[in-house]
Image (cartoon, rainbow, N blue to C red; front, top):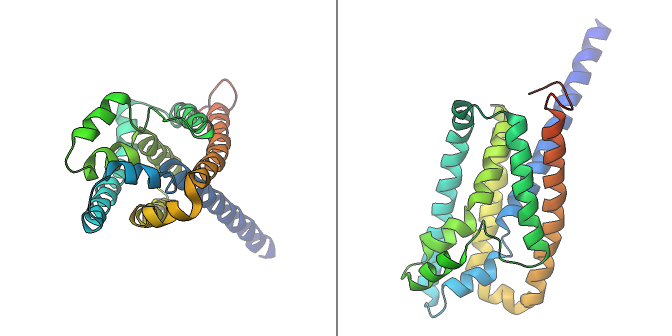
Length: 229
Protein backbone atom coordinates (compact mmCIF):
# COMPACT_ATOMS: atom_id res chain seq x y z
CA UNK A 1 0.00 0.00 0.00
CA UNK A 2 2.82 2.39 0.86
CA UNK A 3 4.49 1.58 -2.46
CA UNK A 4 1.27 2.40 -4.33
CA UNK A 5 0.94 5.78 -2.63
CA UNK A 6 4.63 6.43 -3.29
CA UNK A 7 4.14 5.69 -6.98
CA UNK A 8 1.12 7.99 -7.16
CA UNK A 9 3.12 10.76 -5.48
CA UNK A 10 5.92 10.41 -8.03
CA UNK A 11 3.43 10.56 -10.91
CA UNK A 12 1.74 13.63 -9.39
CA UNK A 13 5.08 15.39 -8.95
CA UNK A 14 5.98 14.59 -12.55
CA UNK A 15 2.68 16.03 -13.80
CA UNK A 16 3.14 19.20 -11.75
CA UNK A 17 6.66 19.70 -13.08
CA UNK A 18 5.46 19.17 -16.65
CA UNK A 19 2.64 21.68 -16.22
CA UNK A 20 4.98 24.21 -14.60
CA UNK A 21 7.41 23.82 -17.51
CA UNK A 22 4.56 24.28 -19.99
CA UNK A 23 3.35 27.38 -18.11
CA UNK A 24 6.83 28.94 -18.15
CA UNK A 25 7.16 28.22 -21.88
CA UNK A 26 3.68 29.52 -22.69
CA UNK A 27 4.05 32.80 -20.78
CA UNK A 28 7.58 33.45 -22.07
CA UNK A 29 6.54 32.71 -25.66
CA UNK A 30 3.36 34.81 -25.48
CA UNK A 31 5.14 37.88 -24.11
CA UNK A 32 8.16 37.65 -26.42
CA UNK A 33 6.20 37.08 -29.64
CA UNK A 34 3.54 39.76 -28.99
CA UNK A 35 6.16 42.10 -27.46
CA UNK A 36 3.96 44.61 -25.57
CA UNK A 37 6.82 47.12 -25.16
CA UNK A 38 7.60 46.93 -28.87
CA UNK A 39 3.98 47.88 -29.62
CA UNK A 40 4.52 51.33 -28.07
CA UNK A 41 6.30 53.05 -31.01
CA UNK A 42 4.15 51.10 -33.50
CA UNK A 43 0.98 52.41 -31.85
CA UNK A 44 2.22 56.00 -31.89
CA UNK A 45 3.27 55.70 -35.54
CA UNK A 46 -0.06 54.19 -36.61
CA UNK A 47 -2.14 56.78 -34.71
CA UNK A 48 -0.13 59.92 -35.41
CA UNK A 49 -2.40 62.97 -35.55
CA UNK A 50 -5.24 61.10 -33.81
CA UNK A 51 -6.91 62.63 -30.74
CA UNK A 52 -6.31 60.90 -27.39
CA UNK A 53 -9.88 59.61 -26.99
CA UNK A 54 -9.94 58.33 -30.56
CA UNK A 55 -6.57 56.63 -30.06
CA UNK A 56 -7.96 54.76 -27.05
CA UNK A 57 -10.88 53.45 -29.13
CA UNK A 58 -8.42 52.29 -31.78
CA UNK A 59 -6.30 50.53 -29.16
CA UNK A 60 -9.35 48.83 -27.64
CA UNK A 61 -10.56 47.56 -31.01
CA UNK A 62 -7.07 46.42 -32.04
CA UNK A 63 -6.60 44.29 -28.92
CA UNK A 64 -10.12 42.82 -29.18
CA UNK A 65 -9.65 41.85 -32.82
CA UNK A 66 -6.17 40.47 -32.12
CA UNK A 67 -7.53 38.40 -29.22
CA UNK A 68 -10.38 37.05 -31.37
CA UNK A 69 -7.97 35.93 -34.09
CA UNK A 70 -5.68 34.23 -31.56
CA UNK A 71 -8.67 32.48 -29.95
CA UNK A 72 -10.05 31.22 -33.26
CA UNK A 73 -6.66 29.91 -34.39
CA UNK A 74 -6.16 28.28 -31.00
CA UNK A 75 -9.47 26.42 -31.37
CA UNK A 76 -9.15 25.24 -34.97
CA UNK A 77 -5.36 24.84 -35.03
CA UNK A 78 -5.04 21.28 -33.71
CA UNK A 79 -7.85 19.82 -35.88
CA UNK A 80 -6.44 21.67 -38.89
CA UNK A 81 -2.99 20.17 -38.42
CA UNK A 82 -4.53 16.73 -38.01
CA UNK A 83 -6.58 17.17 -41.18
CA UNK A 84 -3.49 18.21 -43.13
CA UNK A 85 -1.55 15.25 -41.75
CA UNK A 86 1.11 17.44 -40.11
CA UNK A 87 2.78 15.72 -37.16
CA UNK A 88 3.73 17.46 -33.93
CA UNK A 89 7.51 17.06 -34.50
CA UNK A 90 7.23 18.57 -38.00
CA UNK A 91 5.24 21.56 -36.80
CA UNK A 92 7.47 22.01 -33.76
CA UNK A 93 10.58 22.18 -35.95
CA UNK A 94 8.94 24.55 -38.45
CA UNK A 95 7.62 26.77 -35.65
CA UNK A 96 11.03 26.85 -33.98
CA UNK A 97 12.72 27.93 -37.20
CA UNK A 98 10.16 30.70 -37.77
CA UNK A 99 10.51 31.96 -34.19
CA UNK A 100 14.32 31.95 -34.50
CA UNK A 101 14.10 34.17 -37.60
CA UNK A 102 11.83 36.56 -35.69
CA UNK A 103 14.26 36.53 -32.75
CA UNK A 104 17.14 37.53 -35.05
CA UNK A 105 15.12 40.52 -36.30
CA UNK A 106 14.36 41.50 -32.68
CA UNK A 107 18.03 41.22 -31.67
CA UNK A 108 19.17 43.46 -34.52
CA UNK A 109 16.18 45.83 -34.20
CA UNK A 110 15.03 45.06 -37.73
CA UNK A 111 11.41 45.12 -38.87
CA UNK A 112 10.40 41.50 -39.13
CA UNK A 113 8.59 40.31 -42.24
CA UNK A 114 6.10 38.42 -40.05
CA UNK A 115 4.86 41.73 -38.68
CA UNK A 116 4.53 44.07 -41.62
CA UNK A 117 6.16 44.35 -45.05
CA UNK A 118 6.74 47.45 -47.18
CA UNK A 119 3.50 47.09 -49.16
CA UNK A 120 1.49 46.69 -45.96
CA UNK A 121 3.15 49.80 -44.52
CA UNK A 122 1.99 51.82 -47.55
CA UNK A 123 -1.55 50.46 -47.19
CA UNK A 124 -1.50 51.23 -43.47
CA UNK A 125 -0.48 54.82 -44.14
CA UNK A 126 -3.54 55.22 -46.35
CA UNK A 127 -5.93 53.58 -43.91
CA UNK A 128 -8.27 55.82 -41.93
CA UNK A 129 -8.69 53.44 -38.98
CA UNK A 130 -5.53 51.46 -38.18
CA UNK A 131 -7.16 49.32 -35.45
CA UNK A 132 -7.69 46.18 -37.55
CA UNK A 133 -4.82 46.84 -39.94
CA UNK A 134 -1.99 47.16 -39.14
CA UNK A 135 -2.32 47.08 -35.31
CA UNK A 136 -4.45 43.93 -34.83
CA UNK A 137 -3.10 42.26 -37.99
CA UNK A 138 -0.21 41.77 -38.39
CA UNK A 139 1.23 43.60 -35.36
CA UNK A 140 -0.59 41.80 -32.52
CA UNK A 141 -1.78 38.60 -34.20
CA UNK A 142 0.62 38.16 -37.10
CA UNK A 143 1.95 34.88 -38.54
CA UNK A 144 4.48 34.55 -35.72
CA UNK A 145 1.81 34.84 -33.02
CA UNK A 146 -0.51 32.43 -34.82
CA UNK A 147 2.33 29.93 -35.25
CA UNK A 148 3.13 29.97 -31.51
CA UNK A 149 -0.55 29.53 -30.60
CA UNK A 150 -0.83 26.54 -32.95
CA UNK A 151 2.46 25.14 -31.67
CA UNK A 152 1.63 25.42 -27.97
CA UNK A 153 -1.94 24.27 -28.55
CA UNK A 154 -0.66 21.15 -30.28
CA UNK A 155 1.86 20.48 -27.50
CA UNK A 156 -0.97 20.72 -24.95
CA UNK A 157 -2.57 17.65 -26.58
CA UNK A 158 -6.04 18.49 -25.28
CA UNK A 159 -5.01 18.75 -21.61
CA UNK A 160 -7.59 20.95 -19.87
CA UNK A 161 -5.00 22.31 -17.45
CA UNK A 162 -2.47 23.18 -20.16
CA UNK A 163 -5.16 24.73 -22.36
CA UNK A 164 -6.20 26.90 -19.40
CA UNK A 165 -2.54 27.86 -18.90
CA UNK A 166 -2.25 28.75 -22.59
CA UNK A 167 -5.36 30.94 -22.45
CA UNK A 168 -4.07 32.66 -19.30
CA UNK A 169 -0.65 33.26 -20.91
CA UNK A 170 -2.02 34.99 -24.00
CA UNK A 171 -4.72 36.82 -22.04
CA UNK A 172 -2.02 38.24 -19.75
CA UNK A 173 0.20 39.17 -22.69
CA UNK A 174 -2.72 40.88 -24.43
CA UNK A 175 -3.63 42.75 -21.23
CA UNK A 176 -0.03 43.97 -20.97
CA UNK A 177 -0.16 44.96 -24.63
CA UNK A 178 -3.36 46.94 -24.08
CA UNK A 179 -1.76 48.77 -21.15
CA UNK A 180 1.39 49.59 -23.11
CA UNK A 181 -0.60 50.76 -26.14
CA UNK A 182 -2.98 52.83 -24.00
CA UNK A 183 -0.09 54.51 -22.17
CA UNK A 184 2.23 54.60 -25.19
CA UNK A 185 2.98 58.32 -25.01
CA UNK A 186 3.73 58.31 -21.26
CA UNK A 187 5.80 55.10 -21.35
CA UNK A 188 7.87 56.24 -24.31
CA UNK A 189 8.52 59.53 -22.52
CA UNK A 190 9.80 57.61 -19.47
CA UNK A 191 11.94 54.85 -20.99
CA UNK A 192 12.70 56.47 -24.34
CA UNK A 193 13.32 54.79 -27.69
CA UNK A 194 16.56 53.30 -26.37
CA UNK A 195 14.68 51.60 -23.54
CA UNK A 196 12.24 50.07 -26.02
CA UNK A 197 15.14 48.69 -28.09
CA UNK A 198 16.84 47.26 -24.98
CA UNK A 199 13.69 45.42 -23.86
CA UNK A 200 13.04 44.15 -27.39
CA UNK A 201 16.59 42.78 -27.64
CA UNK A 202 16.28 41.03 -24.28
CA UNK A 203 13.03 39.44 -25.41
CA UNK A 204 14.76 38.48 -28.66
CA UNK A 205 17.40 36.53 -26.72
CA UNK A 206 14.71 34.65 -24.79
CA UNK A 207 12.75 33.94 -27.98
CA UNK A 208 15.88 32.65 -29.73
CA UNK A 209 16.53 30.20 -26.89
CA UNK A 210 12.90 29.04 -26.93
CA UNK A 211 13.06 28.60 -30.71
CA UNK A 212 16.17 26.43 -30.47
CA UNK A 213 14.53 24.34 -27.74
CA UNK A 214 11.45 23.85 -29.92
CA UNK A 215 13.64 22.57 -32.76
CA UNK A 216 15.50 20.22 -30.39
CA UNK A 217 12.20 18.91 -29.02
CA UNK A 218 10.88 18.42 -32.55
CA UNK A 219 13.98 16.56 -33.70
CA UNK A 220 13.88 14.30 -30.64
CA UNK A 221 10.38 13.22 -31.68
CA UNK A 222 11.36 12.16 -35.21
CA UNK A 223 12.43 8.65 -36.25
CA UNK A 224 15.89 10.05 -37.07
CA UNK A 225 16.61 10.96 -33.44
CA UNK A 226 13.88 9.67 -31.14
CA UNK A 227 11.15 7.09 -31.35
CA UNK A 228 8.92 8.96 -33.82
CA UNK A 229 5.88 11.21 -33.27
